[in-house]
Image 1 (cartoon, one colour):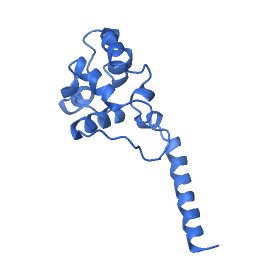
Image 2 (cartoon, rainbow, N blue to C red; image 1 turned 180 degrees about the vertical axis):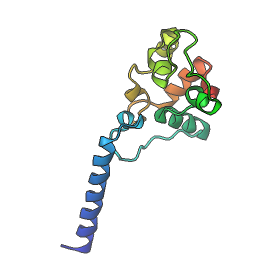
Image 3 (tube, rainbow, N blue to C red; image 1 turned 60 degrees about the vertical axis):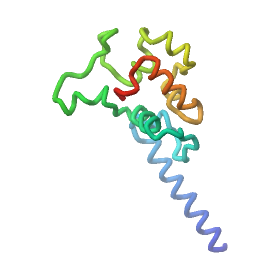
Length: 135
């Protein structure tokens, strides 16, 4: 076995261990990004990349500002349910027409995964409902 073979085996082992730990976690990002491979797509606009990252992590100004302000959990103004990223992007019936017009997928794991959906689709939806700045 050459040093090159040993290094490849060691790297593979580390990636497998990392993947195993990643799969066991219960983060909001795990269902959206089920493996530890690098995502290829990045938008050319950093502001939009940050917006998508916040959505993927589930930590946005819109859904987490109340923690800093020691206020009540925000509610959807249209449905009177807890305001979550999933509710905003997928569930809220008020935004269904915009969802359809922008071709936003109906599963969060697909909508926020850059290997399955172009991030510009999500940004177009947020722009359409005038929520981009609140993320």
